Image (cartoon, rainbow, N blue to C red; front, side, top):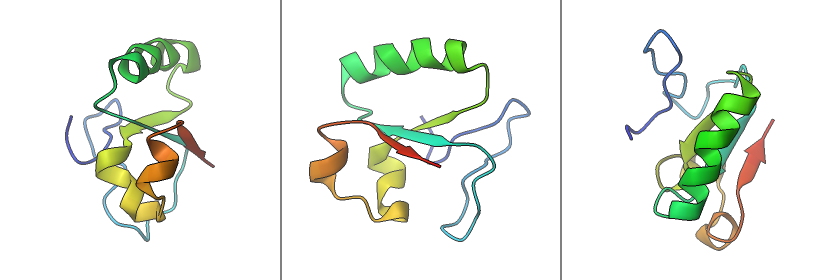
Length: 77
């Protein structure tokens, strides 16, 4: 997955730390198969109302320690 989550038009929504989120963002462990499985399901259920991104690529933007996102998904509103 690229360094940013992409919307349905293929444009990056997450380009700089100063950007305000227009939708909630769920960060997950992109190396975890269990996490990727559930994120795939949640993408369908949330119908584009929530963005998802691997924490490995976006957590530092929100100053979330690896100890936090490696144990649980992080929902940023």
